[in-house]
Length: 183
Image (cartoon, rainbow, N blue to C red; front, side):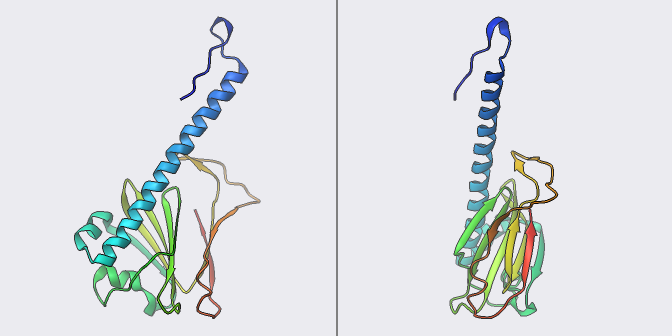
């Protein structure tokens, strides 16, 4: 860790304050990156537990009152059916997993490429608290405002940049609806 000297007679000079600000921002970004990596790892552990049908691990990773939301054809609610054991489990193999703060996006498709899926997980303190399941839907994730180390910046009125777009929704060779997820 770098340190910066205090100016003459105990006064901070402007240059040192600038460097301290950069150092604090770097530390906040490093903390955010570590958090995003941990959140991504939690989601990957869930997929491993689902694949191996390790019910105990699934219960440890998911909150008992999981907030679930679905968009797509009703027969394609594969995640809910897998979690509740209603039907034979769908084989979720993520082809892409990315993190944005507490939100982790995973995307994949079935072996025949006829069903694409996207899961938007919310992870809090190492536990998954929410999931949005999208089936045969194109998804664009956009960031509203900026978040650094838990502090929200002001929402920009004119620009909400796209930070991620689904890639596998068009594999089935048919048109699918498109949605925007604002985080």
